[in-house]
Length: 138
Image 1 (tube, helix red, strand yellow):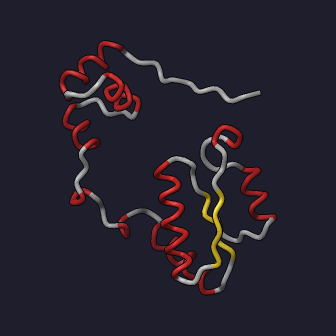
Image 2 (cartoon, rainbow, N blue to C red):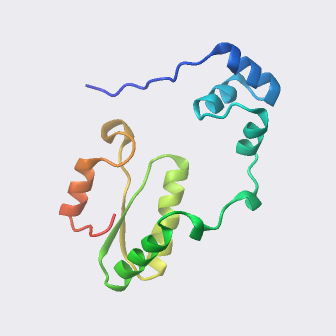
């Protein structure tokens, strides 16, 4: 049986208020509300991000041990597989990460699932298949 897309129900009045207050289309207003963004200033911040608002990567929880594990995998030539995504930013991120890990000398490959067949996010069966095929880090 095929997968079904579910649309988040919306409050038409709330969408209209945000649309007018933030100066965005009804579709954008609905998308912002679905993301939990209800204030016009927050809509602007989301739609017009500034580089100065980005945090240092080292501040992200768990990033330092992750970097250590990745460098150890590269050093030990363990098979690293990037589990990508098929949309534009997912494919771009997969390509950048693949290139970076390759330039660092990594034994790297990639896997991009079919969202309609495999679903969104990590798929347990795909992970088992990748591990069976030799992936030591995903």
